[in-house]
Image (cartoon, rainbow, N blue to C red; front, top):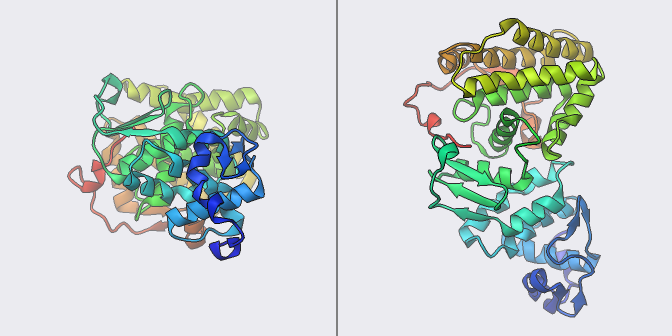
Length: 360
């Protein structure tokens, strides 16, 4: 519903929107919900009149009308309007995340609203031991984004961490970082399938899980901070014990690599990859676009077993091409509705600017 359809909303109500966030009132209208949050999980807790007032204020900030079917999700951005910790330029950057809200049926709006309303960005943070090799980080306990090497890509990656507030103890680190970077690439990068900068192997692992389990299942796991949806899907085709065991093996590859160790136990890891591929073939058959996509992502992932893993990764992309398949962005899905290898038009090297986007 656009602004024209909202002419019945009185000016005093519109003018009081920001005031309402702090006091719990819209002019003469008393808010019946917690004024610090307009959601209960994914459900709006405000009246239609309060919603109209918030949408008028939000659309004024965005500079465009929001389609009626998107309003409940776009209202998450009203938390940014009320955030006193962000500059106007920073708020404007946050507003670009509306489509990502709308296209996620699993996002906990209540948690996201609270995070967005209170998050701050610190450009002068001091690196600690865990931040030594990264360009930014998100402190989920303090709800603070720390920027060490500023760029839109770094800020965007950390904003997604903030929106989902995924607890590290609930999901494997490779899964958190791979999903975060994959979401950023699909919604914000001009070349969304060129994944050679931040977390390329983590992304390939996440894409394999998307191919096998379905991207909706993987998005649900990420949004709910739980591997249970993925385990449940795999357990439809094996035992739960096998599902958990193979997910543990997938995580183990990255744990070993993070400790600067050579990955061993090749037989175990080969069995894990075979396990995933057999489930995929059972679900979709052999040789289809799901299977071809999985095999491509598997070929990228398997370079983790070698010392010169990134060089080998780049060789595959340079000589084979870039796999173009969208997992989350509806806009990309409209243009890339099947798996396809696009010829590589880029020359990859460690001096290439594409490697400069490295963050946590």
